[in-house]
Image: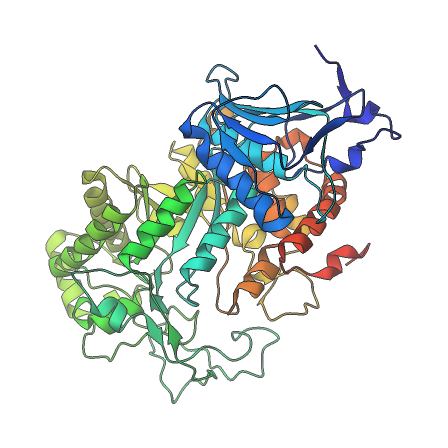
Length: 556
């Protein structure tokens, strides 16, 4: 048996230096061979899989080699005497979910996962052992890595409602998640600003709801944005052209995904062991749907239109009328959505439902009286409970933003805590699962620098703040902490109009997020992370990823 020593003890004069071991997210353990030698991948190297269940992992690695390093290997079930990369599964290799062991010698590389996903994660670490330059020897240091994730839910969100991104980019985005060992893609498909998924029974959702006639010019109104004229109104006063002026660019844009395209994306993600969670917003953030079918709103004659601005949820009539007719519509929509997504989980939004529209609607008030619903907060709870019951009847589970706690949490719902941690703590204390996604820590559409060189939401979220976030609140005891399912970063796209801007906003903060989700708490060290980022930046350059060069300076 070969001997290994820890990274700290490895001789700096060795052929394969420890500087090359810069894996993100940081593995549980990394040890380096005493000999300082390793394995070289060349055209004769074979990728050996014990059966076709490992083909996804092998193909992903091969595609990376071909696309970025101009080398394509043969995938085979036959193991040669040497010069091979072997992928195997041993369910008994670890008691931890989706664990892997990667070992490289001079003659071969072995990746043993205790699941298919585990082997795939081993491939992601192998990719980070590759050089970040083209046309040089593909030397892999002699190393042994034992690794497994800290959290079961490791998610990233993308808002395609405010800005539409085509299928090719959605696939690229999913690859970014895969590189960072994430396993959930939260696809924000509907909102006030656009309906992005084809629903056969209701074609106007995309014919009308998938297009908006303009977007905000400059930053959304708020402190420091006095150049945009905006009059703050009482909650019960409707916004009109006479009392508020927000400039928009008048540029029509939009788009939607056909059901075949959705299936294509879901299959692509599954091959990377990523579950796609669709979000269909309700009872609010529904203006795009109501522009198409105003009869499901509280004021069908008000002239709904797809939103051109964001925020000001109290000023726009954007809530569904809680009638049986409306619930029938939503159940039809969810039935088609659930047929497209194998995911156990359906995100139903539930956030920022202004109660003034229900309060002003005679029909809503009549419904509340008939059903004994005491106030509009209780009506929000009734709405969520009713939708949950329907989703549960189809064998699925709902996820909602933390407002679904208002009026009483639905019995089986998962809470995504975005308004800080309070909602997540409350849910965990009553033994319901939580995904932590607090705006101040994990909204990657916020500025990276105080004097940013790119228009972004006017809040500050530096890389270090993301890295140092701890998803398990100190207020929870050990039993309650088990209900923290994981963490998720969110990217809202009002100021993100192209793929390069998406890249700029998520990198390298997605690297920090991945370490929150995957790496063990006691192993986190920001200085060490910054050192490992140096190699990651070179990989970004190899892959043509846009990121801020300010991170290359000592004090950006």
